Picture 1 (cartoon, rainbow, N blue to C red):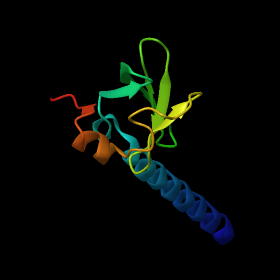
Picture 2: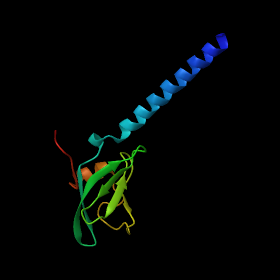
Picture 3: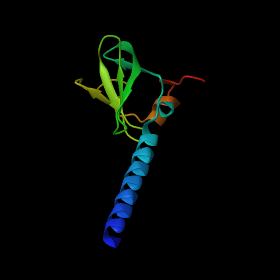
Length: 108
């Protein structure tokens, strides 16, 4: 009986720790962390990329109305999806996009 109680407590502790880790991971990628819109110039065209999704891994996906896309994380750099990467947003962090006036946050 003692062994069974220890197993139950150990299982409970492991479950609680995994839930805390999931909460901590999720806090790195909330909608408040990312701008609603990012403005980029690609091959002479100005595009608006709208925040589409944020994955459980903290990767945000931005999509333009003409179906161009890019990804970024809170601490990472912007990366085009399926493009050549030569646009004005490629390789910039969120901080750099905000400082250059390319990121637009929703005010609430």
